[in-house]
Image 1: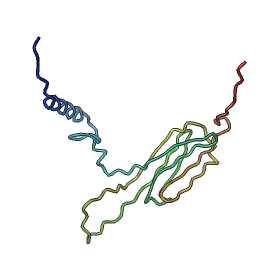
Image 2: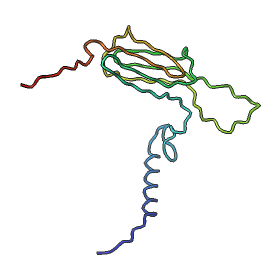
Image 3: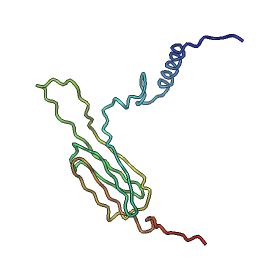
Image 4: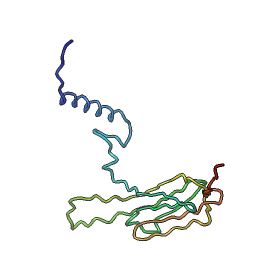
Length: 151
């Protein structure tokens, strides 16, 4: 049996080449020379929490800097869509910009709801950059907890 000396740096270079080839094979705007471009792109995607209790579904959307008039909420069947636009500030030519990290642009998030809701009782509030949507469940969708007696 022949012993072969293990060279970790040599093995890593092979992995690096394979990963680079893997990402180059994708014909997609998300993939570039070395990994995902989407992490560096200037796309505004609000963060969302979807929760529920026995009576309601709740959707909390972080959209700081967005006017409430620039947000639309639609529900079609069991799909809730929240869309809008975060408008960019005008650049002041008299200033030097060293770093611009805030994202702007149109956004749209759609969610398949886990339960049927009463659409005419949906409510939405917008406070301090957070959109809170309350979606009351239908009576059929509410979870009824019942204790079963063992005999």
